[in-house]
Image (cartoon, rainbow, N blue to C red):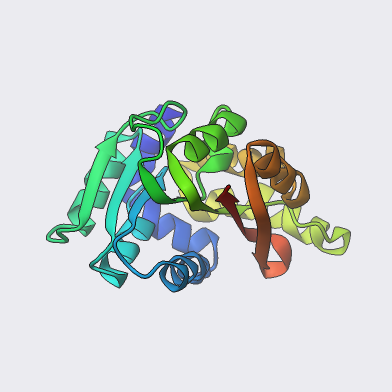
Length: 224
């Protein structure tokens, strides 16, 4: 998996725009708007699996009173993030393992993760780690791709994700990498099951918001 993201980093943003048919930016704005609306400033925010930094950068720019940290395991992804976020003073980058976050207990007020949880080796452990580093009353926001719940659209969904998306995203050279990313979505728990996992990890007030007939879902939870 490390090699996949290292190889994709320079083309990652452009490919995501293509495979989401231009919708990805709107989905990310949904998360950013929720965080901005529910936090007034002064919060310490962690963006887990930050990739090329879209969420962390948008939050840091959206409220200069936030202190935002992005963490990812891929040096190539972080290089893209640093370049895009150059000059933003309330923004920091850390290379690290999201299954063993290098932060003390109760270090952050908000934790975000977008299109990353499904690509981790053990998402239950990542949920526990995110809860560990949250302060009491802190919130987690998880945006990710899901197999839609509506069976009527599954044939079209699978046709696109299994056969068209890898070509749009990777072309001939990187088609295998995007086939793997498609498989990670299909192997990911459905929305309702993942919400149960949030509860089992110790989050309360777990709720979700969906887009594109459930193909993209934002799950939120609170640390009691």
